[in-house]
Amino acid sequence: MSVCQMLNVQFRGNAYVGYGQSCPTDSTFLRSQMSPQPFSINVPQPKIDLLKQKLSLAKYPDEIEGSDWHLGPPVSEVKRLAQKWQEWDWREAEKKLNEYPNFHADIEVENFGTLDIHFLHQRSEVEEAIPLLFVHGWPGSFIEVLKILSPLTRSSSTSASNTDAIPAFHIIAPSLPNFGFSQGVTKRGFGLVQYAETCHKLMLQLGYNTYATQAGDWGFWITRAIGRLYPTSCLASHLNMIYALTPKPLSTPLLYLQNLLTPFPASERRGSERSKWFRDNSSGYNKLQSTRPLTLSSSLTDSPLGLLAWIYEKLHDWSDTTHYTWSDDEILTWVSIYWFSRAGPGAAGHIYYEVSHTKPKEEGGTGGLTYWDVLKWQGSVKLGLTYNPKELEIFPKLWGRGLGRVVFERENEVGGHFYATEHPDLLIRDLRDMFGAQGKVYSLFNAK
Image 1: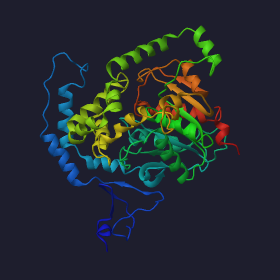
Image 2: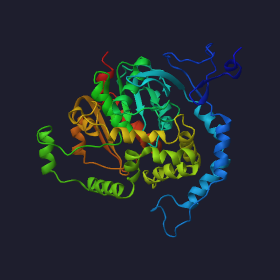
Image 3: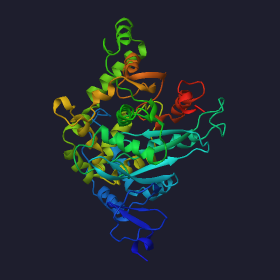
């Protein structure tokens, strides 16, 4: 019996993951292209012990009188959470995460070799349910899907052809490369094309040749890239963070005229104020991670206190805290997934650099997709857009219609950047309305 079999674990990268299945007989653990396999999160105990040791030795800055949240999270709050984290039981959080259907699979990415990708895959009892790819962003992870996972897989009918039924979904939520329990990328150039390729190939490997997507944050840019690169597979996308360009007379002439002649409603004027607040007070992280991510990564990788403050600030500032309160358990689980991530706490920030430094071919680039490329009109993918008042930046709905064929649109009175966590009931409602029998994408997935 091998050591692997005795321990009931397999070593992959720098973390142990238990599968409850037989281990490979090859003692070198050489990997071949692997079909999806069950995955169990099992952080090595020395990593947990090191976290507690580092937290016990943490040094805190002086509190600034009257600073509130203007300079970042108050020192007293960070200290309280750090001290709780030191005593907090990761194993209990780990146990809860392992109650969900965790899997991993090898995905071959062109020019980057094979990556071991972690994902949740919750199938509905409705065999013909809609495959829904949920793509997270930063500072999120697969954990954002948890509150909507079970409700969306359920339907009021076991047949997708029942026009009175609530639509059901098969849900796939990967940890993006460099995030969570997926493998990291160790060379330059992994941009939108590669993230899109990873997610698309995962869907194909699971047998979903056509599917829909749901996303915010980096998921917005990645699913837009998926729609551009794989339009015959990605049939519809729901987005809860919307970036858009001012309508242009040649590409979207009707929207251009409407934009000139239509005054912005009060909600969009408030959205403009929110956008200004974000750019003036909360966008520095983007510039830093887009220019020198490794500098920041050195700090985040060595200091759990720094990581906690870095992420906690975003959870607070980017949420609609009037209508949602983060529990300590939520915050510590969220941050711990980054601390124990396979590629390290700072690796997730590299996406900012790679995408912001992508150049089109006409500028001497490799032909990767830029931010501007995925903001262009895409007519093949039907879109659903939800606008929340505490999103990072809020663009006029007229501009959002320049992204493509918008078939569903909703403006909420509550909600922030972390929509699936803050208001899962509203996101569930949006998806059911968009994909239900009365929606304009129903026929795409119920042609029979």
